[in-house]
Amino acid sequence: MNPEKVIFAFFILLALTLNFGFFLGEMDNPDHHNAYELFAAIVVSLIATVMKLGERTHIGAVLLASSLVADLQLLAAAVVWGVAVHVADVGLTPAVMASIVSLSGGALLANIVSTVVVLIETSRFRR
Image (cartoon, rainbow, N blue to C red; front, side, top):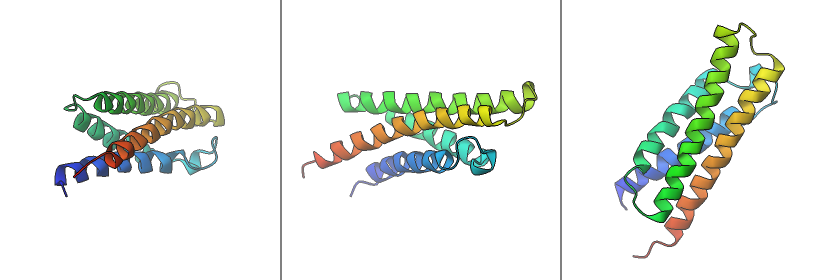
């Protein structure tokens, strides 16, 4: 067992599960989506992206691209949340919350792609 690959897979799966945890719930209900969970999803997704920077294979490029998409979507969700609450003083209306959850849903899809690519790469591994 390679500890480096274990840590790599750990962060990819953690990014996926945190993102899923935030995405789960009624789309327009702010009580179902925790800001700290979104923050944790962003931090873990950024760590996973940094870990993918060293890959020089084609699969590594796909992993990096999917991770960058997830980062962008999660950061956009955080920006929408921050602007709605602190800048525009609109608050977390159902429309704003639906936009935030939609953006995290896009990140969730990118994290699923990343996880599937890692699983495919792992299944191709020969001893």
